Image (tube, rainbow, N blue to C red; front, side, top):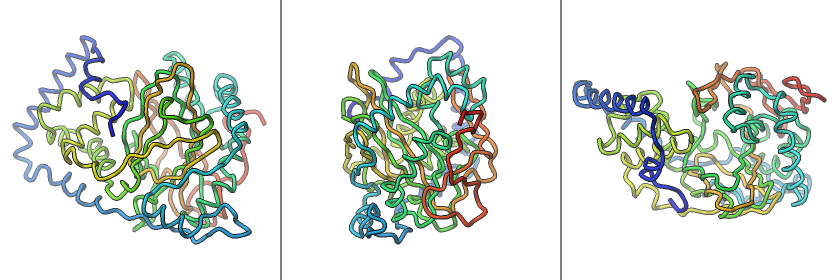
Length: 408
């Protein structure tokens, strides 16, 4: 499970702190210790909110919402056997979306737009773009966010029948693409640590997706991960634990840590607290922060928590894709090659009865020097399959080349 990834102890040892950061860390340790030893015992059933939260997110189900099955009119739709396998594992078998040469050409075309078109035609504040460029972090991972709304090649890719007919088998006849992005790993880049996502709160004050009451947590949204280069273990293949969606507690411990930070920190073993604070407060890699939270989760749930699931490496040829529920635990290897760049285009899809950015105007974007706000209430979704007859979300049915000042 941890193959190819540094331990928390290794990350701590490799990350030096400034004098100011050391002083801040010591102050935080004292504050948490005081809260745990003095105030926490007097709160009365102090850890009951966390226990109640965890108890409510075990034994999750995954039930397909769509009835579309493969036929002459919809040759890419799933068969009944494929749907039933997805309901058990939460991940599809690889399938082809593009020919290999098409995928490689698309990758080069998108890289070429990072500093040309995407530099100005994007939804971000200009100060955010300048700060990320100054830090050497302005790349396709950030510049490519939401670009399927306005780039015809991406719009066509994420609305291709090979993808959308399969999604209709799972999500129903009204399917929306609510976010598109790229995940690129260059030589020497570290892996992505194990994590879960269902409603995609991330750094926001609230969840970005609100499904109807009673919706299976694992079916709030589905991700389509499309390889635009060859994907191997050495260049950073994605890894997934099929079936692990049945236990959604990791994601909700993360959420609890955002809403009840002091209670969360006070619940940790004292000997793990410094490492969690050190990585969580100061490490520049956001997935190092995810790892420190994951380590804290294992302290609460037990280190045997994930031993019941296999770890599957997702090895793909250019142009191949998989569909998976993001509530399955997933991550990726580091890229240990000298000259290979692994690139994936990722689309995130919801049924049309899911509210996107509900009652939410702003999201938060991380940078090495603090957060920026991103306005999201005017970012539309794409109608990927069927018709959207509700007035729940702002939806577009065609590519929008002039969005954010882009050229048609």
